[in-house]
Image (cartoon, rainbow, N blue to C red; front, top):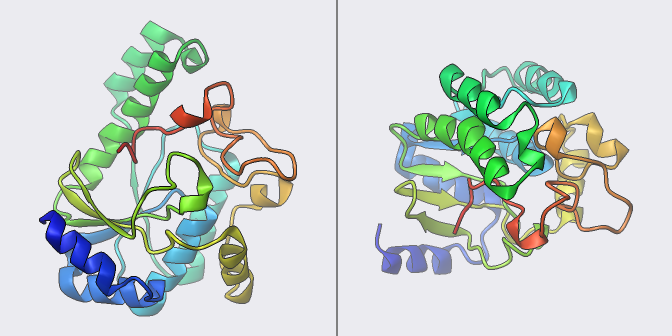
Length: 234
């Protein structure tokens, strides 16, 4: 898709509700569009919206092998609540074994190079497999989440993956997300009630204090402008 088309779509949906954006893209792309869910609040909101628009939404998640037990419970609760089955993608066994043999079981604490390699093996490789056959991937990104996301747009062209990237909640505030969750009884990770605004792999996620940046609990030993796993590299 050309940048002119991306710009035109962003102008077309500048004031549109997320549901209207999702409905239009679902109608245009059918089974070539999917939600990439990390099971966070935003992705759970999008799951709820998608299930109210379509009976057979395509939703996938990545199981890195290092997730919280609460995240696995949420996968089961989400499937039961909406009567759907999430597609779960795992890292390749050989890649994980090589990673651990060369860097150690928790080698990601030692250097940014090790951490990014771990994210590549456990997230980026499975993501590439999940993208096969897709033309659009839906994400739960919001501009106010971090300094690395404040310039992102509703609709973007992801050059790295050759896909249209759709961020329906890009302009939403945290309060808007929470309000939707509570008003629609959306299943969510109970860790959110214990100081975890952003939840990823267990070794790389910690609770934050009230008032701290919502992404400050992710890869907290690194500089804020590097706290991404590579899925949303720009």
